Length: 211
Image (cartoon, rainbow, N blue to C red):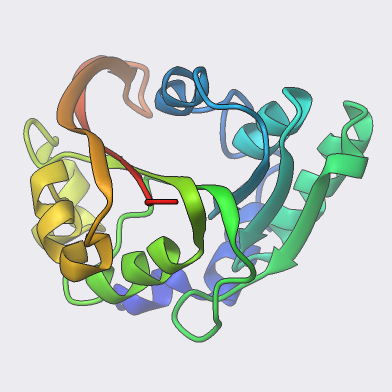
């Protein structure tokens, strides 16, 4: 399987279809921390998965568009939103970031742990920046190269991990006039698939578009 195959609908539909749940269901910790001071508005949750972030945002008053390449994943987002009483604030859309235009403009565009090949990342993340409304926020969070376990490279070549500073550089003039509010390496405790603890670093980039 090629690295590119890992970003197809077929790959993710099969993966989600093989298990009742893949992710924890909890919102990403960086999202919780970085959105706390933002007034609810419209949000685009990119690579929404099973909806932990989208439903959390909706429960706090955001009107969320959840996008993912996997229809199976988005069915889970919709079902969870319905179960938690926020279905009226969550819309889902199948979007392939390699082929489709990101829909609409939003007060918050957020993407977590979308580990893209280095050659593809700048164009795709520039597309996300273009979907931020004037005065809105772009929040990108990924695995920082520092401290990544060797086994991570079995499925993710090293160029799929970038620092926050590298993300700023790759976005380049797409951020002209923007305010970079956070661009840092942030440590956290994590658990490996086999249950062993590990300390990891996240690359956190939060930027605000001018009004």
